[in-house]
Image 1 (cartoon, one colour):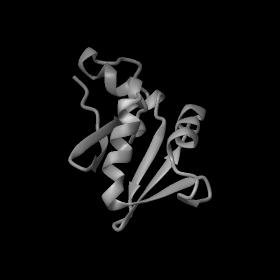
Image 2 (cartoon, one colour):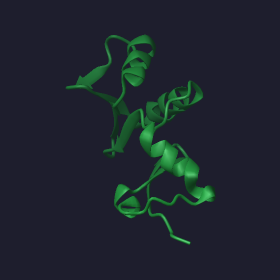
Image 3 (tube, one colour):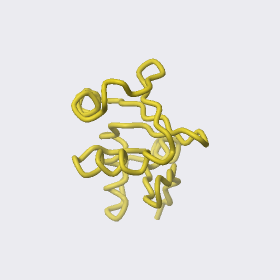
Length: 105
């Protein structure tokens, strides 16, 4: 059985993981137990990055962009298309996104 390597992010004690695309190259078989990981790779909505004092939330889909427009305060700090969030608010934001069905990594 092939093992999949994963990329992992821990936000406020919640762990998000998706398979590393390099581990999937050339393999057309998907073990049943890991099929949910492969599906997550194709539906990734928001890329979250911990930069120490701030977290960066980069929307990757129109669904994620619409969610942010609806739920993020207009005065929020943006760096290009990426939302910049203080570490103390990152968990609640990530949880809200997850609760509404967005996939984060």
